[in-house]
Length: 290
Length: 199
Image 1 (cartoon, rainbow over the protein chains, first blue to last red):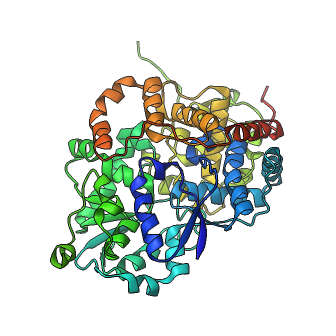
Image 2 (image 1 turned 90 degrees about the vertical axis):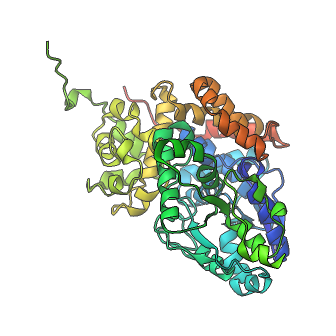
Image 3 (image 1 turned 30 degrees about the vertical axis):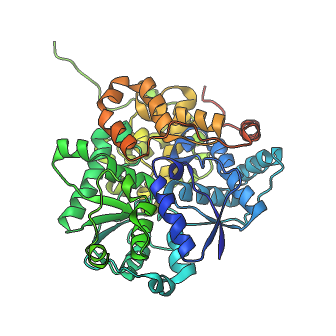
């Protein structure tokens, strides 16, 4: 199994623990990832606020490079990248005006895009291509007794939910259960974390983050599992400010790939778990077996 | 003396043609069929912080109240969670309409002053144009300098935490073929037909 890999800017910066856990986990499962040659920023929500045509060109450059170099399944771990690349793919197909602009701009760099690139999320690939049965075979240290709140956030499932439901996705729930974890019922699983508003308008943004943390604690979760670097940052890095405004809601938030790595017996250090502001408590199973 | 403030708009406040211009943007055509049900406002996690609710913005755009919409904080508080877009019974892409309004406000320079969100969007796009990639910590520092340097001082704990966890990146990430990317973005400029300005 081989995929093109689009890390996105966050996985080289604030979200580096995501890449640090994704790569060994994929390798452990025999999935080969080829980092997309000279990939550029997807544009995220910010570029789309400035200029739609240019935002489309920016994302399309990546789609075109993947089409040229192959493999044409482009693995995209960050939710914002996943949304923007998917949105651009749809827009090029649906709107002739956008298609013309993109083709014209790609031509400047001798690139072409016919629509062959598929934008895939690791969660989708792991559960639907690799398969839960294969993953289960690799579990050497089941996450027994660990209560996990599965948090998907918004842009993975909306509006281009290709492999799961827009409001009540279950792909990660099933994956976590396969790892042996106890999946906590978490109705806020697709509620917005505040996005970049946590930094720009904290009184509104951090309140949304607080609601998510509080609910996970109230439901008895030990840890929140996330699939997006911005969600992880918001839920992890602002505890000081949140505690001061609304009271303590201390709970660790980790990437689902970090939990997979732990269940596969990979070392926490190798999985970037040291990068958390609020560290995850040691697994009961871990201390028992070591 | 008692201050009197008018709370309802006069028709004369409208900028004729504005709704057509927005509905001409790809993806915004459906605005025409809005039934003002308010599902967008109900699903929006940020509507309680907005000066106009999403439903009101839809009505204001359709009725050509350009200045009211473009100077409102609402469009900048949209976090792009797409809840409204997925739920709208008329299949209006509300999030995309918010984007069209943000683009218009930036283009005309009439977004709320010293408001961090549009400044972030502009700094972000300039960094991408120059380098091809974003280095988040450098971007945030630029934002603080432009929008609110006092807030930067208040965030020292966050900065320290990022250094402690090895997430504070000081070297700029960039792509190899930067000239190629800039040329492509410029080509999009020429290829893009902007809607005509309202008189």
